[in-house]
Image (cartoon, one colour):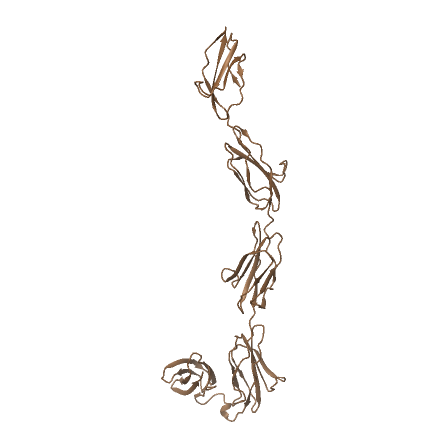
Amino acid sequence: PLFWHMISGATQYRVQVALNAGFTAGNVVKDTTLVDTTFTMGGLLHNTPYYWRAAAQSGGSWGDYSAAWMFTTAVAPPVVPAQVFPANESVDQLVNLTLRWGSVAGAATYHVQMGTDSTFGSGVLVNDSTLTDTTRAISALAFNQRYHWRVRAKNAGGTSVYSSVWHFRTHMSVPNAPALQTPANGAVEQPTVGLVFTWQALSGATFYTFQLGTDSTFATGLVKNDTTITETSRTITGLIQGTKYFWRVAGRTAGGPGPFSSPWTFVTFVPVPNAITLVSPGHQSLVGADSVRCVWNTASPAASRYWFEVSVDPLFSGFSLIDSTVTDTAKVVKPLVNNATYYWRVKGGTATSWGPFSSVYSFTVQITSVEGTEEVPDEFVLRQNYPNPFNPATEINFGIPKESRVRIEVYDLLGRQIAVVLDGVQSPGYHTVRFDAAGLTSGMYLYRLTSGETSLFRKMLLLK
């Protein structure tokens, strides 16, 4: 409404409202029939400047207009904001999220409400009318809970009505570490192809992460890192034989990944060695001492241990000497009985299994001289290597009368040193060293024993 002061003697008033101070354009009101000192207008534009003035009539004549005054109408109240996120009826939302809505032209502030009651009569968690942006961060919501929210805009012209009430549900809690099932922790002899890993299902888990590697920390040696598994099993192929592996699993919900299980270990299958080839003493050979060094070839595939067995019974059904802890490819047997025949065999094994036995070799003990039983020789002795010819390894037996530094070297026929087999102090008595010529070509070689002023030579033949 417009108001002005009463003029004494005035019988009528007239008022003008226009969009400019000269009242030449955009005249809104020109009313000459007013008898009161007030005038109410409608239909004005928002946020628009207007000019107005009034004049009085007395005795049938109009007086001059008053000075023009100006006023500006209020801005238009804002429209209802459009909600953006989280979408209505959405699920698996984070427990820490940000409400978002569209910007409203002319809005100065926004008022958002969120709670567990769709009428907001109770359970209101957020009631914030101070927002100048179109977002509101929310934290620490409950897992698997339904929430409702709405928003309205406000400016100097007024406040919009609230938007529609939208609702969403938060995700279930982050899962615990799953319980592993197979292969069992510490399992051995596991297949390298088609090995199935299983674990217990986790409630609410949508994916599982499976890790497999050769490092217990999974920092290096990672073989598999699969984050897309939806079932509770994973089949792996292409593992390496005789290898220790570590594996673990973690679950994941819409809220993120849970912790990994403690890692379990297993060892893949190691093939058992094939039958071993015996070397010395040869089958049906004679042994001229009360001890013998039994030698055999290295097992293939490789063995981690050997089973050595010797008996006076070719069927090994009676008393046998058994050593299942041998890690070298030789075993000394003593004391032997003169004129007795002995039978021996060897098999290779892994940590958990044994391969087949070798063929059975026999030897007969025939001690015909004192030299065969003497413990300490009277002088330095260098005996012929055995076997000879050999491929690729042979044994060199020597005796020393007193504690001495002994050096045994191998030369080719041009006098070039090929290898140093032994270089060290030895106790009195007979000793045996092993020479492996795997890297040499066939031919005649010399081996020499030196100790102080003593120097002894012999020849040996390598045949490949």
